[in-house]
Figure (cartoon, chains in turn brown, blue):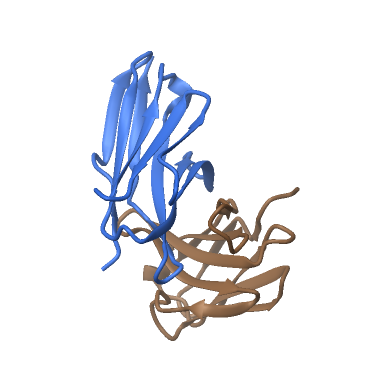
Length: 114
Length: 112
């Protein structure tokens, strides 16, 4: 099992540009989570999906953020337009939607917006 | 508000000591609690998962306990080693919202 795969590992962009982060969950997992981690705020849940359907997006900070899951094996998190305060590490995680299943994380995408 | 708190934020102990990390949560209606380890520049690795009906879980030198009534969990690390140095986070899956909420973590340093 390759685990949760995120791309790119690092992204440096200028303010105002569009950024797209990608995630491939573990095959068979039906819940997918997007988190953002910063020194100041720790690990924040942005949005999560069950069976490709967004369940709770209350953590998405602004309308500039959007997430999609067109199928069970792929999800994107898009920021448009990006701002310097969006700089953080963005993690994707997946699990089976049952209480016995642990959460598996990708290695994250480190985003720097200048 | 459903929160998860970890104290202390940082801990440094000499190699060989046994130690306990603490996690507290505000709502006892949970499905499970997980402990994770995060190394610098890496993602989180799941260490132990305790289901709501369980009191503890063990894996090697790690033992995690759960007391729902008091809203507390501990992670016990026996015979600590420098390789245990990392940030340890606990996360709670709350029943009401099906959200996994993380604490801010304890940064552990084991001195050789």
